[in-house]
Structure formats: structure tokens, C-alpha cells
Amino acid sequence: MNKWLITGMALGLGLGVVAQADAAGRVFAGGIRGRAGGGVVAGHVTGFRGPRGAEGIQGRRTVSDGKGDVHTAAAGAWRGPDGGTLTRQGSATRDADGSGNFSRSTSATGANGGSYNASTSGATGQGVTRDTHVTGANGNSYAGQTTISKDGLTHTGSCSNAAGASIACP
Image 1 (cartoon, rainbow, N blue to C red):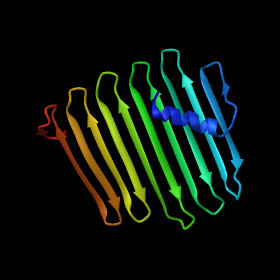
Image 2 (image 1 turned 90 degrees about the horizontal axis):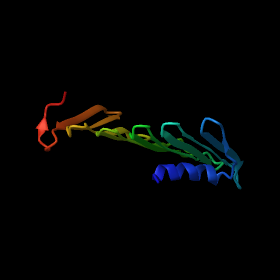
Image 3 (image 1 turned 30 degrees about the vertical axis):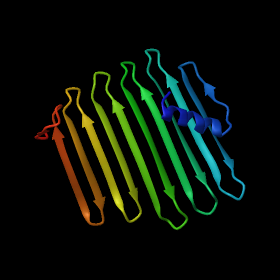
């Protein structure tokens, strides 16, 4: 079982809520509760299963401490009826002093080959960086990085064929 699927189920179960299912094969659970000393924990999890084999689950959980510190985490996993998959996870933190950071990653695999992997991260005063790697069904690939900061925008990228030799990017 996919680790993001497990995370999504744990988010819903950790809130101690009752899930409701409907006739279309969807389920939703969510809730909010106070924490000792202030703050709250809130979250939800949703899932579905389609008639042709598509299925997915996603969840989000936010925790605050009553002092201005907040952390949110989310994850999801989906599979299409043809076998393609997608997973996504992310987290964001804000401290009471206003500083914060975040990270997010996405991974997809096509039913006929090919893949996409990307991660994005950033922090107060540090800018944002995105790393991307894409591989086509034929084995050709692209790898790149883009950074945006107070100093401006930088981008690097390269392409290679299935044997690993450099080729011109389209």
C-alpha cells in the first residue's frame, strides 16, 4: 500500500471521526478539536473508487499551538483506470514570529511508460526552488532547476537520450 495512502487514512483516523460513504464509492471524514494549552487540530480525508478501477485518497491536517505556530501537512495518492499513478505530498509551517517554510513533491507515472517527479521548497528569506525530472516513454529525459529569490530568477536544465547522452532540449 502506498505510504501517502496510509498517511491520508491516518489523518482521518487520528481525528477520531466517523467516515460517511455514499453510493458513488466516495468516503469523507473530517473534524476539529481543541488542544490542551490552546490551539486546534483540524483535518479531513476523502477517498473514492470508480467503476473502472480508478481510485484515490487525499487528506490534510493542520495543527496550531495557540501561540501563533501552525503546521499543515497534506498528502494524496491516485490511480487511473489505465494504471497511471500520481502521488503528492506537502507541508507548510508558520512560526509565531511570522517566518515560515514549505515543501511539496509530486510524482506521476504513465500507464504506457514515462514519469514526472518534481519538488518545490522555500523558506522566509531564502526564496523558492523547484527541481523537475521528466522521462518520456522512449527514455529521453529532462532535468531542471528553477530558483526565485530576492536576487532574481535562475534556471538550469538539460536533456538526455535513453542512453544518457546529452541532446538538445525541445
